[in-house]
Length: 200
Length: 174
Image 1: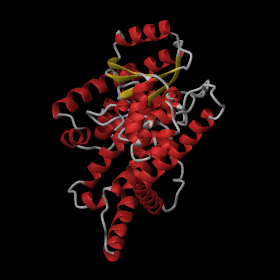
Image 2: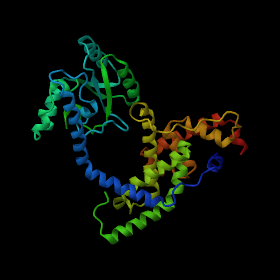
Image 3: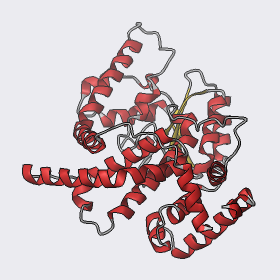
């Protein structure tokens, strides 16, 4: 049997194409060095993303007195906790369910109920606009101009979930996206003991 | 982490790493192919493996069994990729699908083997490939996959049974 398997595997490999790169080692080392540099620059990168997001917030705020129809993009909101990777590339531990601006009380209550009874979900925490704003203020306590440019109503409400059952994650997200009152759903990979909604 | 190298030491380690890549890459790529049945993906997985090893090179270069270590990194990359693919609809959309099966082909035994292999749980696939293509010992495979020796033995037995059942007499003919 072993011998047979070995022969069959060799046959399966017989149509191997030429490797695309002549100098694989050099290529790999270049990638490794680039990634190393990028890690050092990561903090700087986050700051740039922030400035861009603040730009959006300012635009939303400009029409005098009229509340914006859309909240500050959830992408920015979820970046509030830099300890987590958002969106998660694999193994999401947390899910942020951002709510639409016009969600009704009944929709919010129904969603809350659904999430609490979902087997894929370990814990559910509701985060109001005011709570999101407090986290935001704490994050930028040393940058009063950034804090001043955002009002609570610009930040979306959300449910922050801890995912228990990885295998049911995809299904959970699919269901959430179809639920009335849900704007965006973002999976994050957070280290142990960290939640995406706690602002780092 | 690579750490601050002196220029000479850096050149030395780079030469060492280059030699390692030349020796290890072809086999890594073939093992990856048996796991994913896609040469492009196999090349990517090999590259991911080597980049991860390069990043840790200063720490791992004197590891007694670099070959086994590289298989461990590779299999983790394979497992990650599978998971990513199942989450792909949500967070990623840029991973290639498996090559479509061409209808009308006569199914040769080695093709049937890879197809049957693909129906096994991914860890069992890894056990079969590491044991029967890489020809590694049960103990080494257990170390690579971070499971006990008895798990490797049992799962290997079960996997072979399932492959036999899928391939039927074709096994006996070779």
